[in-house]
Image (tube, rainbow, N blue to C red; front, side, top):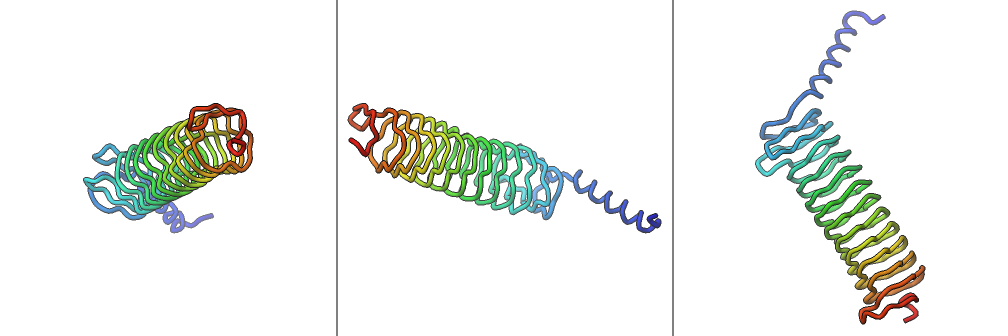
Length: 225
C-alpha cells in the first residue's frame, strides 16, 4: 500500500495537472509551456498543450507546442503542431498541420498532412493530402489530394486529382488531370482527360482529349502534334 506521504504527493500532482488544463490565457503577455484554453480579444479560442506563445493586439504569436482544436483568427505561427481546428487568417512559418480548415493567409513552409485549404498563398513545403479549394501555390511538393481551383506557379506534383485551375510551370509526375489550363512545364506521367495545353514537355501518360493554344482539339498527346 502507498503510505500517506506518497498518496499526498500523487494527489498534489493530479491536482496540478487538473489546474493546468483548466487554465485560461486571456490577458496580454507571454505564456510558456502552457496547457489550457486560449480566449483572446480577436476571437481566437482554442485548446492548447505545452504551448509557448504571446498574446497582443496583433493576435497570437505562436512559438511552439500543440494546438489541439479551436479557431485561430490571426497572428504568426512560427513552429509547432496543429492537430485540428479552423484557421481564419495569419502567417504560418513552419510546423506540422495534421488536420483542419484553412481559411486564408500565407503558408511559408512546413508539412501539411490533411485538411481543407480555402484560399491564400502557399510559398513552400510538403502537402500530403486534402482538398485545395483556391489560392496560389508558389512552390513545394504535392503528394496527393484534390485540387479544385487556383493557380499553380511551380513545384512538384506527385499524384492526386486536378479538377480545374491554371498550371503555370513545374513538374507533373502522376495523377489525374480533369480540366484546366496548362501553360508550361514537364508532364512525366498520368491521365489527362481534357483541358487546354499551351506549351511544355510531354514525356508519357494517357491523353483523352484537349485543346492547343490555337483552340484546335486533339485526341493525341502533345508529343505527337
